[in-house]
Length: 80
Image (cartoon, rainbow, N blue to C red):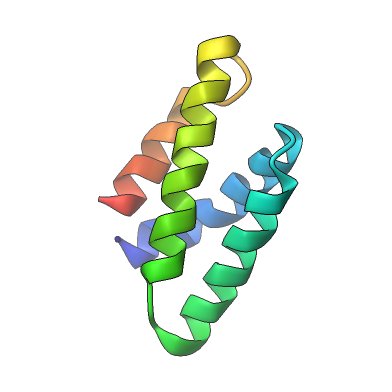
């Protein structure tokens, strides 16, 4: 996980998750991000961000305008 890239994209990812009716995942990712900032353990962030990526791809399959392609790419880069 690239911490700098994740820091830039995580807020937007959380906001978009809420917009596509994934509020539970958004709150989990938010909690994991704060936890990561405190303890430096990225396991939860990586897991929840991966689930967010899956949710974004599923949303794009139904409606290509539901989630911006750039957001998906930025999240992929942050996870790489």
